[in-house]
Length: 365
Image 1 (cartoon, rainbow, N blue to C red):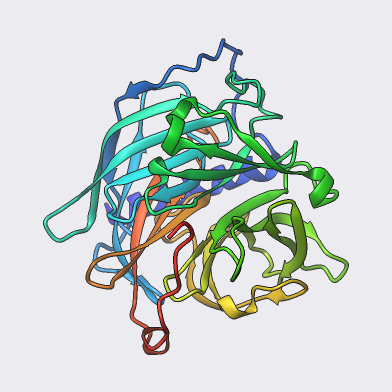
Image 2: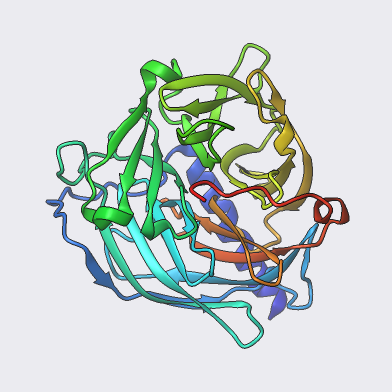
């Protein structure tokens, strides 16, 4: 039975990778009117093992597996989650989809503190500059999400978009999902980017010493600099300065989040017909993040099709009252029935070098 289940998992991964490679990601649905209403949705979940064929295999590199679930919903707009923000207390998630939808839901844990389920959810469309729901894939391809404060629903959040490349600020704390965006950065400041490989990863940084403007680190999926590295940007107000991330072929960046000591975790994914899907986490020293730099770091986690992974795109990190650091990941199912929406949690193993470093202030504190 274990052998059969393992091969079913392998077939699903390989077929999904084939569809991804071919660009046949999802069927084209009939266009329906979009309303600005926030709706409650029913969410169902079931547990997933880190290794689908071996419940005792918990190896996750420099992290520890702390539970995972597959989430489903009958809501026709559910799926495509590409950005993630989790509240500091771990009770609530906020996600954004590449079909211009918000999702918020309660996160449930078992008696051991492991991720075990998902509670009631709410969805709403992202609004455009005109205050109306974004109803175009070309204009609503949201990929990155970051919050300026510890609770993403109580402050400003920043969303990056591909195709029509830009970064918008939404004042969710003040207006909820009825918030109209403020346009911060457009392609004019970013320069030419590939249509479907623009700003994929974004995270808020603390204001510069003596400054009061929100700073952002934004990383493209696969826009290359002249040396073949992945283009990235340091943004402060309307000021955009360039840096790069060293290409880690065949992986491409999908999200970035800060660690309490000022370093960053970079989430990257890969897929191919032969290898299936893959995922890596790289730790980037915070001191390296400056204009003109080429960012790199050691790989903390390298996972392949033997693990319960999919098209991993969103990441959020929090530190609890005991000092443990928790890493949350979410997958984009591309509205493909052969793919899944996975939410998973890991604990970052203690690093003596990190423990000696002072805690850096969070944006907005």
